Length: 372
Image (cartoon, rainbow, N blue to C red):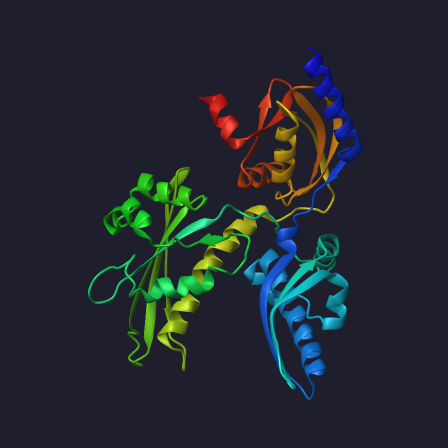
């Protein structure tokens, strides 16, 4: 009992001092990294100035496209670097190289979430912020010799390797292709769609679903002599039946086969991103409030859950109402619908369940244990 009183006093003191109002911002959603810039001018200083302005414009465009549907990208506002500066929280520079007239670097920007949301609402743009669990990509290529996946001579894999660093609301993960991966999942299991083996590999990379993407390059039947790539993408999930999408891209004039495959990877990503965004488009800008209970066994439980909540984009803040030894009751502020909140929480391995007359927030693993 004495130990319990010490814990209660210490715990309450920490909470009341630091956590009366926990403000949540999904900073990573509004962060754009690795923007490559290369500018030449009469002096190094002017080249640097031009490069920073170019990078700022490119990064802001990437951010707006990340949050909005591809059909709406043509309506996004065109803004100068000077106008964009007001939306920049901070930035950093890496891989900086300079000469008397040239400047090269990689830029990393963080933008102001509140101001960006306000801009999109003012111009009538719908947008989403929730980031899904990563999707594991398995790029299967079909040359004349037969289907390949783990082999080194897989240009489709190479295209995905270049595109895997692109940050959207649906992150993608590419396996390492090492012996452990090959032992876990054979090409035969991929072709037969063995969900258990596919999910086992996905778990290794902390991914949710697995996307098997087939690509075959052949001649375009229009008689032009150009190439085309036929793509078939099958999404495997433990929660639903496999979903199959097929489409074809024709080679543009002057486009190499490598560029065609890169464009194919981009097209696949677009077919992942837009459906996710449509489900998570934020309706209205005003925050809703619900009361929830968080069971705890100690301070560490709350600190870990608080960290998870920081990655939930639709959560705007958490107000602590009551603290006891085994639970914390809070008011949770969020935007969007209740079902969007549930989905967003799931992406951060949190589950909100109804128990008697209250809503209780658990880590997803703990929620599954309670069901079984």
